[in-house]
Image: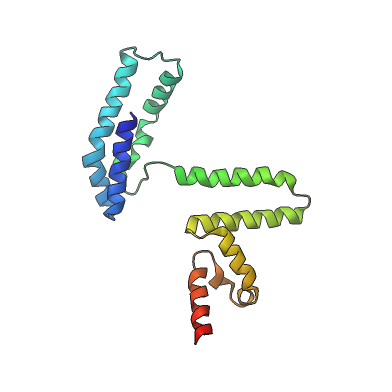
Length: 171
């Protein structure tokens, strides 16, 4: 089963590497990953049908769960642009849960607001590929410029703003 899924993820990596459109990626997966998923589905059904696994065991329950959710699991073979997994959403939920846990230590409502703000900034930085520590440090260093034009200091564009300021300083 793991080898099959490794093959599917390998095909997805190839599709990303080739920068395929959503429709081309769908066709690519239908051609290359479709047979792998069909074979996996048959293996799962056979495993239960031939009583190779006790249905109430952990593996049996996992196989039943997969079979019950098969249409959602294989949506990437039916819908252009459908992701293979929901890891992005799960990581975002983990951030919210971490913030909720940290909120137990806020002493005031204002402290909670500041904590929420920083958690949001840190998560946005991570999503945009910016180092949160470097970003927050640069915000402190350029507090005056930040006050004049906050839109130029967002996690997704502050590098360009720093480069522009460096060019101006060098001129």
